[in-house]
Image (cartoon, rainbow, N blue to C red; front, side, top):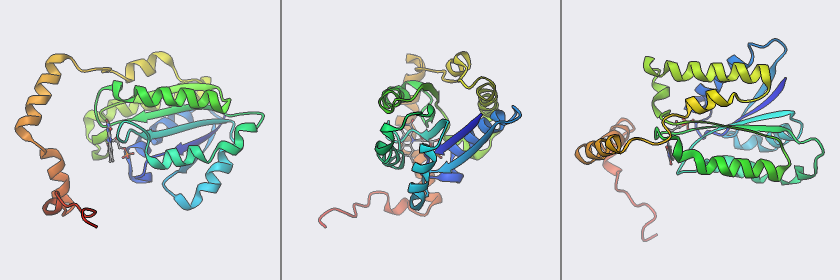
Length: 220
Ligand SMILES: Cc1cc2nc3c(=O)[nH]c(=O)nc-3n(C[C@H](O)[C@H](O)[C@H](O)COP(=O)(O)O)c2cc1C
């Protein structure tokens, strides 16, 4: 199989999407003869090149993080460039990988519906979407997330063999679809007590804590 892959993370090679793709593609490559080309959509100057790659693709996988309940702007901008290819005869089959910070897959179901609709509009065969929440800490490389990455390897492997996402594996990986009411209550409680503790740590690490309430556009 010849696969054309787009990484829709604004963090490009440094992001969690790239870590996931790395494992997925290693699995995919386990089948002899499988090849792929990987494009990072955050390289804005290469947009024309990406569009050409899409136009010549046989099978496409587009992976992106969930940003404010949707796709990052660079992904939307890329999609909007594809209109001239609506008339192409052999449309590539398209599958999606959507990973997010919040653990519940439910957050990504809206964008999943969008991808299904878009695939239809492009006249492409929709291969489905792999949804995984709780991915924010992946870049820290902690052992507890190894299992998730192994699952992505296995999904890539079965995709490389069958040209389709394994439905059972996709369903298992998406768990939990929603948190139980008890767990939600506990999280809300921790949030109340700890406030913005997690985000404050990030702001401090990036020397931006003192400017956390800055409103640079106000009154401008
Ligand atoms: C600007 C921004 C918006 C985000 N919005 C959401 C969101 O709406 N829901 C969610 O579950 N995670 C959200 N996240 C978390 C990311 O989806 C998560 O950290 C992801 O693993 C980042 O992948 P990346 O490193 O490839 O960009 C957001 C992160 C950023 C930076």
